[in-house]
Image (tube, rainbow, N blue to C red; front, side, top):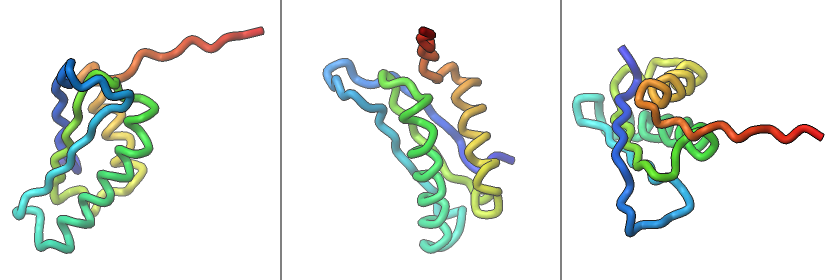
Length: 100
């Protein structure tokens, strides 16, 4: 089971922000407030590392934390986010590298 669920929706056109918006939610089923906050912090950090570089700016992202995120290795959570972006076709197009 994954450590989170990723939801993606088009960003409102009237909101022409230069960055992607990301939201986080963790249900009470995950645990007490300490456990929920720990999951939220872990998700916030992987989103901070991955989405600005690889996410599309015209989409809004919501990460729904699951109990498995408490035990999951941080590098594995990061890989799961990249895979989820690929599955949802929410990766930003790669910029061509200019060669001299």
